[in-house]
Image (cartoon, rainbow over all chains, first blue to last red; front, side, top):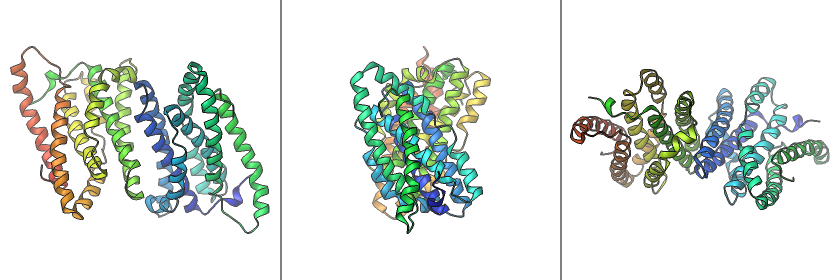
Length: 210
Length: 210
């Protein structure tokens, strides 16, 4: 089951994926600036560097395509900025969870969608998106905080549910639309079921109920 | 004329230099988040990546020394955070100028001070700090804004003077103190005169009066 037929044209894909990754990086660097300890700040700086490397891997593909990254991302900034505002979180732990949950889901989603790109782009983009995200480093921070504070766990579980809802919407908006809405829905549904199963595994790994 | 005799011990040097670079990166990523255009945001993401690479080059030296970056930076965070709060700027152009002026001055300063490190550290740290800062990319943004707005130029010139004053203070606080205050002063003075001359050249390059 795949989304390849619903992959948008190369430049749309790259513009959305690159701006999404830049937004993930922005959220990580904001969480870094607000980190409660120097150790957590240092950890976040490493995770942020990995996200920024992915963004620059994607902008390199935009340049290879003969376009400028700023121009290629521009059409998608309003929707993604709006998504970003809804996923900032009310405190540091919510922000860190948002980085983990949104980046985990969207990296998975863009990886699947990459299968529909021309094969040379598909291969390079896949290798960029498969680079280490450093999420295990952040997961340790979240698990440690939850162990120390049971209420935090139930608040973060609720926050995780809202995050995945918003993230599914922004992901769906990336799919190329076609005239045959019903067929699309039949194709999309099982893929999103798998993406949600992976999200659930990530939440389980944090000790949170999805 | 050099500062080598006033270079602190390796771990103090690395902790201060690494946290300073992390702060520069934080400021760049904040300016990135607030960038007025997608093009400027993309430019800042590249400059931020270069700063983050320097930070991680310095934390690699802390690890090589057998220490953890978080612990090595911890003793210096309060003073540098305080310096950071004074150099944020009141709008985006002030923030970008602050990134240019403070990072330019402090990279110069830490490069000179590196001469007093044990020679293997000196060589590696120098090569980290000499990596491209990407400042020419930011300078273009500032020059373009000044060309379009004469009042901005005089406001930024004043802001540049305040920045260099605060930056000199944080730099001096990094020097190892010795019992012979007068001799130190005689050694420090000409070095700071040179650092200020380089600062003046940077301001000139932006079309700003230092």
